[in-house]
Image (cartoon, rainbow, N blue to C red):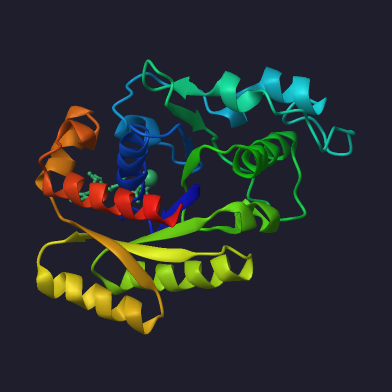
Length: 259
Ligand SMILES: Nc1ncnc2c1ncn2[C@@H]1O[C@H](COP(=O)(O)OP(=O)(O)OP(=O)(O)O)[C@@H](O)[C@H]1O
Ligand SMILES: [Mg+2]
């Protein structure tokens, strides 16, 4: 199962991605992929070490694509680099059993379709390989856009989650993401409400999402434990009694029933 988590900036994508990855890895092998240029999935998992994103691994990019990142355009490079060994060799083992692996992608070139640079070719190939070939659970912590997934990869994402918080701004982003996601062929889209402080806020978002034709598969309340975990550099799974964690557990159960 491949789950992509998206939504407006700051709505709680990384918190949800990291916590889901932890929960699901208790039963399955999970690849957690940080596909957001502003990478912080590692810290939401409580990993403190600095991780070099794949997009910055110059030697690797050169070895696999044939040219050095940043060298002049026009040089011929391999558009189909070998990457099948990379998900395993580049990922960071989160637990001793190796059930949760983290891959930090780094910035994917956003120059549009016309722009091809060695780093983006490698990252795209890697993403394709992970999404299309692996039978594990893959959780993608994404930035708001979904364009960089590409049509073929998008079809292989089973579920796109849009995280929404009380307020029109994140609802507008949700609308835009929904359109993009259906344009590129993502088969299933659903929403998670995050950070509502009371029922009025939750009902507000719920109604708006319904009007947009979006299904809601869970709601995570505003919870100071999330902030506490963040301040202490700990994963939310270390706060198993918190309301936020418990609601994410419920969401995880729903995903499993989609399988
Ligand atoms: N349910 C919640 N209750 C309280 N605070 C929350 C909750 N969810 C997330 N936060 C806080 O909101 C901030 C943003 O969360 P997070 O980093 O998960 O969002 P994001 O969507 O990944 O952000 P970005 O767009 O910057 O990647 C963090 O400080 C986090 O601690
Ligand atoms: Mg984030």
